[in-house]
Image (tube, rainbow, N blue to C red; front, top):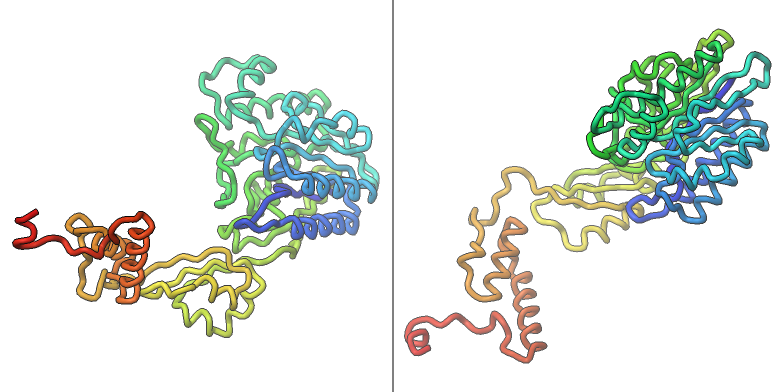
Length: 409
């Protein structure tokens, strides 16, 4: 049997406020092409179909259109709910769709009911077990009742997943073995995570050990966004089709084409998708970044910049955007050893007197340097204007009383 393993589409997600729907549509187009060209018997989607429980209408249309196009090429589809999905919403038509060789499983209660997929090129059917993400504290008691397990007190991700896997293995044994594929959404010990994943944290959460997934010919995992394998090619994450954070800058976004032989042997090909805007993290001095010809390739990328100038240039973001049209993040890190001010000290906010002096001291405390004369004048004008709007004396214009004037007051 030939299957295509993908996961974590997160349809409807944005990147630093920018919609990714167009790039996601391009990724879906590529998935359909790969499935058709490979003559895949099955496409498995290992959870996080959408980015949130109630996805936008455009994301739902993209999902349904993609599933319909996969089926038009004769490919069966098995998908599960992830921790970003609404288990009820994504699987509401599961019973009806299963007659059309589309399975979208949201409840663990049917996880021990496999989908039997008959390969196009002949051979025995393969039992595919869809195991959606399990909400530890909510599903634990129900799972205990279904399995007869002893109470564990505070349920954890590892424990409820392991209990569900025991139910699945029992069904597989009852069927006399044969080839099997597990589709699961979980955090498996040893996996490498990224910043864009939502932590699986309900109560006390443990990673599921690799040995919990014994007994299956192939385990198609979802949740971690980087493509990786944990037990040779048998146990693997396909990763996301697009990068969803700068922590994924070095990821090669791909899918896994799996050839499952009649004897359970595996041949796996990791196929890069090559879609979506790349990511670039740049660091350096402002003028150098604007002038460096080697950074011309970053014009088409999502860019974040860390400036290392002593002073943050005026209108830095707007000026950088001329060179890098898709810049989405700007940080400022002053060089180590840079003195806090020209004299090596800053004004003390507590000892400052009056609104103007306090404002100047606060500015110096935040910027690590006293304000330039032009900046100090802008602060003085702003305080004066505020005082005039209030109908009173301009704050900061009056000097603090000293000498005889203070005595008279």
